[in-house]
Image (cartoon, rainbow, N blue to C red; front, side, top):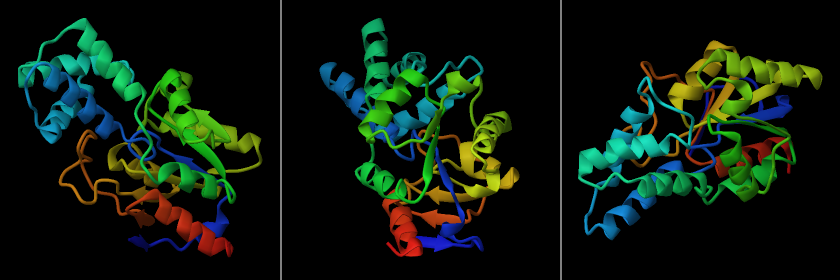
Length: 243
C-alpha cells in the first residue's frame, strides 16, 4: 500500500531522516515478548496490547526517564496492573529486552536500498547505548545519528529537529532536502509538518487498532507520503530513480 499527496518527487531529496524505535525497530514486539517471558516464568498470562497501553501511559508520566532505561520504571507500573512481581531483576530484564529489540523484517534491506539514493539520518528518542545496538542490527546504514542524550531533548521538541537542520547545513543542505520518515504521528509526523518538512508516514500498525505503545496525537496529520512498510518507500525510491 502506498499513497502520496506530495508534489515534491522522491528524487528531490538528498537526505532521509528516520525515527528509529517503532519505525525501524520493533520495540512493541520486544516489550510484549519480554513481558510474556516474565509472565510465563510466574505461571501467568497477560494481554500484550493491554500491557502496551499501560506502558504508554507510564512512559509519558512527568517522572519518565530516558528510553530504554525507563523500561524498568514502566515495568513497575505494568507489574502492578497485571499482578506480576516487581523485582530489580525483572526491571533489568525488560530494559535489556528492549535494548536488544530486533528490526522489523523489512528494515535492513529497505535501508540498504535507500542508502544508494540518499544520506540516511537517524533521529531517535533512544539513548546512544541502545541506538548503537539498533544501528548494528540494521547494518550501520546511517550517515548521521542523533539520540536523546546527544541532543538533550526528545521529539516532538522542535529543538531536536533544529539540531539536525544545523548538521545538514554544514553539509550544504537544508530541511527542504530532507524527507522525514516515521511511524509516530505524535513524535514525528505532526511536528515535521509544522516545521515545513516533507514527511513519509510508515503506518506499522495499519492492521491493528489504536496507537499501541505510542502516545495518540491530539490531531491526525495527513502525511505527504503514506506507506504500510518501509520496503514500500524503498520500492518507490527505486522506481523514482529508475533503479
